[in-house]
Amino acid sequence: MLTALVLLCLGAFILYLRFRIRRPKNFPPGPTPVPFFGNLLQLDRTNPLKDFDKFAQRYGSIYGLFIGSQPAVLLTGQKMIREALITQAVEFAGRPDNMMVSHITNRKGVIMANYGESWREHRRFALTTLRDFGLGKRSMEQRILEEVKYICSHLEESAGKSIDPEHLYHQAASNIIASIIFGSRFNYQDEYFQILITSIKKLTKIVIGQWAMLYEIAPVLRIFPLPFCKAFQYYGEIKNHILKVVDEHKKSRVTGEPRDLIDCYLEELEKMATLLFDLFGAGTDTTSNTLHTLTLYLMTHTHIQEQCQREIDEVLGDREHVTFEDRNAMPYVQAVIHEGQRVGDIAPLSMFHTATTNTQLRGYNIPKGTIIIPYLSSALRERSQWKFPHEFNPQNFLNDKGDFVKPDAFMPFSAGML
Image (cartoon, one colour):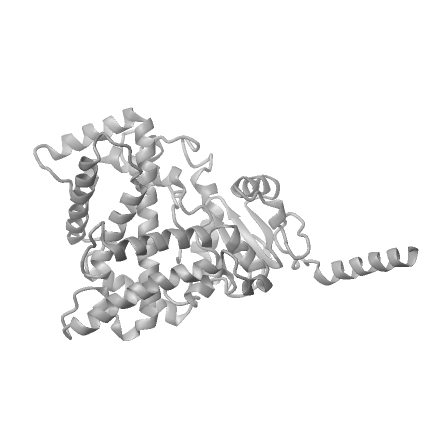
């Protein structure tokens, strides 16, 4: 009996030595990891952000964690995030290669593609073509105003009824992006449009949830039919729909007369399908979630809603529609919109990066391949940067004269190279 106990303890000790996680030399300080799981067991499953705040209070603005056995560095506060992602942008422009979303997209597109010449050319083409079709220009106003009419019509039809505007905002945001990518908008009742939006929402829920983390730390589980398998199915549905639209464009396009981004990009079909998902998915969720957050806060802060209405009425006068240029005459409305993005905190950990080379940050060694996690929530709630960090208050974006100002800590999506 004693011999068996000794052998058991010895075996457990050997396993511990075999699987224990070693912290790289001069790596940023952080909580002690456990074999196999790293620091995941020390994070609250429903709200890990509060644990990140506790670690920041203990270890400072830069600290090391382990996702399974994979080293990761978490950046806290706007100064730390900017130092890494802007000052040392190229050194931290990589992307993790073992994340679920990397496998789903096969590392194509722009968001999850690794930094390099191909990524730069791909990104340049996408931005140039999108601008050619109105992104950031006056012609974009017409697309937005057209969609606003459909939103208002839907809301008027629902007057006196209880509605959840989330799906409506998803449809509207998607249609604005679709008008650039596909050359036309969808009817809200369109079957393919509904499938597209539903699949994007379901896919997003999985890739930012607990099953995605399990997929990444326990590769052996990938062969089993667990919920993360659905993510590949949803992505396939989205991609198949996009490729159907592409096939229609191939049959009808006229050389030298591009109608939309697809016509401009038919030469690189496989890459384009992933790029279109990047644009469609990111453009849909970020916009609709911001609108949803603003709707909720304006419902509970009616005095802010009323002040917005007064400012809009003063600027518009007898005009029916607002224009993009009117924003400079509406500092309060601009402040409210930006405050909605700040408190909405729709991308608390942004997109994970990786170190592209062995480097240093704040005197700590960061080995090549280390995951870099920009904790954007910490910048959006940083006490030294905001007048009212934990309140919904447009004064966070207004100076003493009432002019609109955008603090450096305003990083709703990321900083530096996306």
